[in-house]
Amino acid sequence: MSDTVKDLRVDTPAADNGAGFDFASVLEQHRLEINPVSIDTLQLNITRQCNQACTHCHMEASPNRTERMERPVIERCLEILSGDNRIKILDITGGAPELHPAFRELVERAVKSVKKVMVRHNLTVMFDDKNDAGVNKNSLMEFFTRNRVEVIASLPHYHEFFTDRQRGTGVFKISIAALQLLNRAGYGQEGSGLVLNLVYNPAGFFLPASQASLESDFRRELLNRHGVVFNHLLALTNMPINRFKGQLERSAAYPEYMSKLKDAFNPEAALNAMCRSQMSVDCHGRVYDCDFNQALGLQSILSVPVTVFNFSYDEFLKRRIVFGAHCFGCTAGSGSSCGGATT
Image (tube, rainbow, N blue to C red; front, top):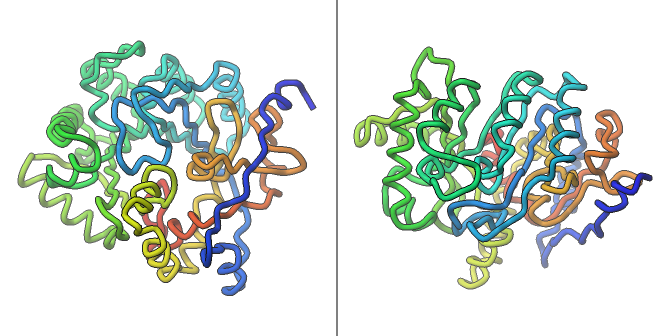
């Protein structure tokens, strides 16, 4: 094993199953085996720094975080993308990924290797000039458009109150202004080929409603109130980890919320879980089954912990996916993933 790989080894903690919330046992009850089937998506969390500190953020991102993906990790990820055409999508996330100094270089080089580059964009960063990545609304808009990246934009609600409650005072108005700029550049407009998808998270201790009905409501309200259009809405369940788990525990609502998730377990959603067809990479090059496992430090394991430096596509498909109580969030109701509902 190389010294680089040794440096990236970590002790993988036991998944937090909690009393009565053992996800693996529920899979057994339903006679389900959830194994890897492909790696369609390479998801890179390139920084924990963000200009926001949202109450539900599973990565606990904030302006004070300093973690950034290191240059050798970026180079190795680009090497993986260019060397294996079975990986079709690069999903760049954070924090606010635009705050990483190498963000633009990463995108420009990646678009030459994969069919789709997606950027998870919080909208307000478009107006944030206080960073060393040189982000501003004009240059970032031009950059997105020129590289034809798919923009996945966070907007918890079409009402100002609910968005600001989750993301901070004034966020809604700035988000709408950013969406209007994206629309003027062609994003979300029919026939433009510039994809603008929105992400919805519930603003409370409950599961999201039907993705189709939410999309209809968002489409109507945003158009009528603000003239904003978009392609699709992705409805995500708030995961019971980190900041959101803290909210639940402070309100003595964690057992009740977990029971809601467990009672809504959907075998079809489990079979469509995103961990079966993607890999998630952190700032140091450690590899995980999903972004939520990354947030909990539940690293993928073969004979040794998997990193981008010892990664092999075919070998990675032989791993056992690491499960925990939080997996009930992805398998409740219509299912939840980085791409929205799964059923």
